[in-house]
Length: 295
Image (cartoon, rainbow, N blue to C red; front, side, top):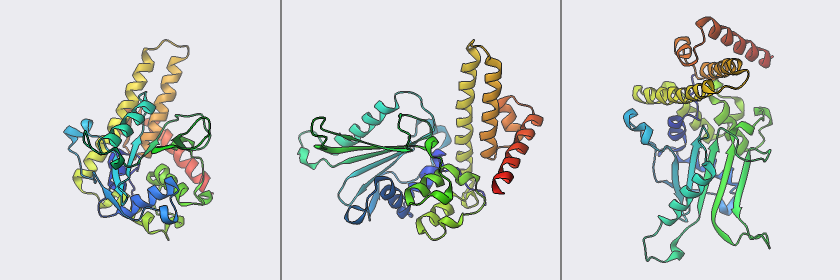
């Protein structure tokens, strides 16, 4: 099987914003927010279910997930693969906008419901060592949460270093799914008995995707590679010592990531300026490491 990368904008929305598979998002939210028993989400309404965007309009499309539970509390889930600066302030703005949009001017403020903002980021933001951090509005003197309508959860995917055999709860398995699915060829046995994961893997299987979905998925993947390439050229213009080696190291990292994305040698060569021979050598190194790890 060939699985899509769940961190790709299109794949993420297709898996977690699926109108016919809401149990996937429910499981995801309950695990991230640690909702259990009476607090657990059992039903959810998607405010912007998955709909394939047109490539021409994709640059203007925000591929997040918005939902509400039976208590009309709002949930915003966003995947971000690159840090363009000001992300923390953007998160505050985005959440505040969702909060105030619940009522019209002059309506009763008591109608306002809590907003949960969840960011899954492929870069580091905070100094904490854990891959997950929760942020509340706390009374500095009493350390109590008197203002309860905002809650932020950030998951820094780069900090997740846990092997599948060590994933002892649903949350860790979801993060493992996000980080590693595109490298898998079969569904690991650790996921077999969990319905929500079975559904998620079925959606991630690219064999089930239509031509248009695959085209948009590939477009997003190449656009991400172009963004990396743009950063590379910014480095080229710098005059730091050892710049040429730095560029080459960056090209090699881009090539490795592109290989993992199942891109062909010609495309990788265009992106990185590496020769086909160099790319084949990198492929062999990755394959050798994979075989060694399996042993």
